[in-house]
Length: 196
Image (cartoon, rainbow, N blue to C red; front, side):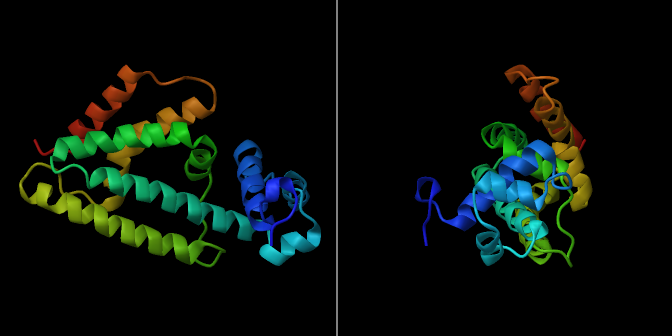
């Protein structure tokens, strides 16, 4: 059923409003009342779609993580060359964060839902599937002695840690990354992950 505000349904309005509120205030500082006010839905409409603020966050986090992972994998699979793939992902990360700043803030600054929380099982499954696909791309390059044999967490930190930190500065309004700096981040990721 579609109602009010430009014909969007209540669930979509709640998700869109939550994205704005969580991005601006953080999840812990956002109240249920502010979510309802931002989305323009009644108490009844809110509880028709979501059981709690945490439920909204879980759904939004899973949706955002899937968007990011889909973009990441689509870009990675375009590259057969190890260096091209590693550097392209850093560039993709920066451009995705620039195109989706509210969603990127959510992924960068909020703790993911735990397994027992709303969205937690979906996040865990999405991550398992994602790392499996990244590993399938990585292993042939590792076996060819082009990329290091690193566990997933360390791989993530070496690959995207500096880019994540640059995004934090960017979102805080402290620094706008230049094309040259993004290129340097790409090269740094390659230098961290290549086999000597």
